[in-house]
Amino acid sequence: MKQILLSFIALCFAPLLAANADEYGVAVISTPVLNTPDFKAVFGGARGVELKTDRCGQVRELEYIALPGTVFTLLKELPSGSATIYQVETDEYTAHPNTRLYIDSRFLRLEPTAVPMRRAPLPSREAITSALRATVGSEYVWGGNVPGGVPELTAWFYKGIREEERGRLTLAGLDCSGLLYQATGGWTPRNTAQLLMYGQGVDIAGKSSRDISNVLLPLDLIVWNGHVIIVLDQKTAIESRLECGKPGNGGVVMMPLSQRIAEIMRTRRPINMWPNGKKQDDIFVVRRWYTESQAF
Image 1 (cartoon, rainbow, N blue to C red):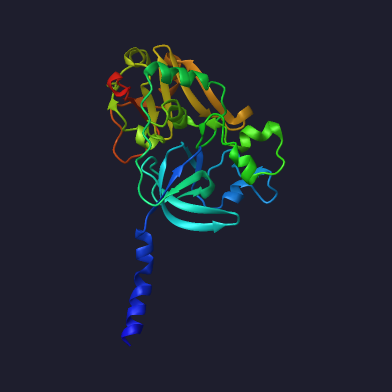
Image 2: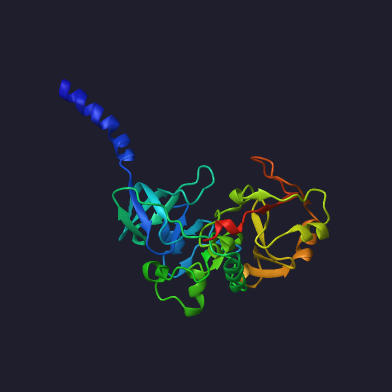
């Protein structure tokens, strides 16, 4: 009877013990992070030549692309053919509530104990603006933050793809926050929900588009729920825009700063600080995050 009781206790607590036995993985190359474990359905499909997209050509299962050196805690192992898929979490990315994150084990180096987080130096203001300018013309990719894409996807998931399709199938491109993320080497938050509160608010409430333009500094962020625009200089803004139905479905463009702010103010009004925990369609903020003391 005692042995049966001990066995019952062991079975009850085994899942808890397994959950606490953390293992870690470090990204060795640019690593797609999905919100589904079904990588084969997203990359390649049944015939090994397709990419699962919505009507605007976007992979909504892609959360972001982790940079080399990103550290993950491995929460759960899911065998999947010749590869293993891990459910993970990382301090470098804040997912929406109830969203689970998954990666393919082939992108990782496994570690039995915790390792230091990836933390590259913040580039200079000039280096960041130069990197931003270099991406003009890149296609819009939901969750994308690697302009050249992830070439390993072609070898691991696709069969006989056409060269002209390589960029699209390997996620070559950038979304709006991914544009900033890649230019800063992963220093800045990866999604707009965090950028709404990042750095310090700039006093813009009640100001005209001209007055707002005059107070902005390079790398200030014009941001609202779901989108961010980056100030390059007092005359120019840059952003990655999704334009569904147009060739390439949008991409990275530069525009006159005053013109872009005037466009925004047709439907949104400027405020100094985003309301905590709220989504609103008629406001925007400016966040100033870059200071010279941050750069090494």
